[in-house]
Image (cartoon, rainbow, N blue to C red; front, side):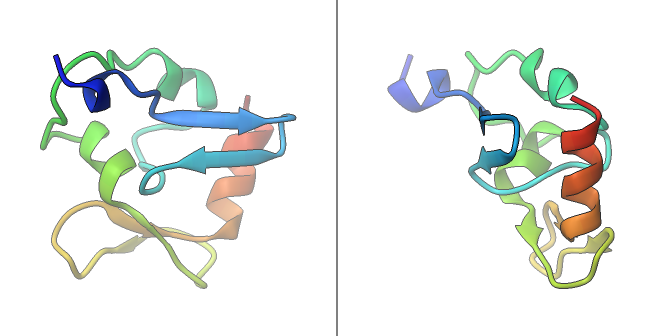
Length: 86
C-alpha cells in the first residue's frame, strides 16, 4: 500500500480551518460523514471520494458544475454549513 493511500482526507484545525486536498462534495453534509470514509484504498473515481480529491473552491457561494469534468465548484456558504454541522 502506498503512503498516499493512507493519508487522511481532511484535517480540521481548531474547529475553524478545514484542510482538504481538493474540496467538498454535495453528498457530504458533515465532517463526520467525511471522517468515516475508508481512506486505506486507492483513490476512487466514485463520488463522494472523487469529489473530495478534485473539487475546487469558487467565488460563487454555492455548488456549481466543475468544467474539468470531475468534482464540483463550491463556495464559502457551503464550507460554513459543513463546519457548522460538525
